[in-house]
Length: 161
Image (cartoon, rainbow, N blue to C red; front, side):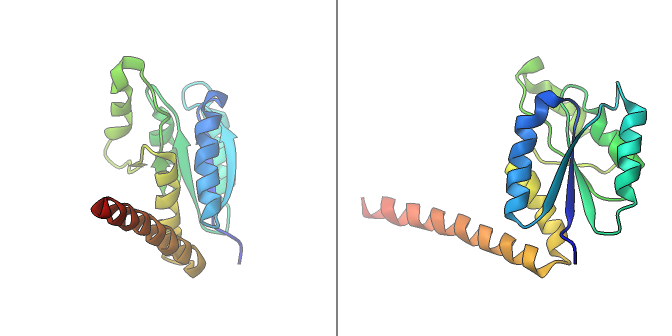
């Protein structure tokens, strides 16, 4: 069976470093990734073409959208596909960080999830796919075990100090 696919769709190439973090984390969970570029504002027809091509995928897939400022890309994508969409906007100091609000409030009928940390967006994708892929679920469980182990180790070291 093919690996589940995570389509990382960025609004511009300026978001590539953020997207690479998502891809690396997703691949660590055994997911296949592909990165694409398209703007809901500037290249809507191009984005629709990208989405239509991936919606014909027979294997499970989801989208992680990466766009800042008004983040129309996440809502636009969610409205055009039946697969899950995770919005993971890049960090921004513009507008005192208030531009994240465009990712928080979506119109009715649009259900893009919002996760601000790239690794956590990949983790959510892995948890979604893990419901049907035992190998992905096992990687999630191991990741969580290591996270917990680090905390308890840190606590033990501090308790002995």
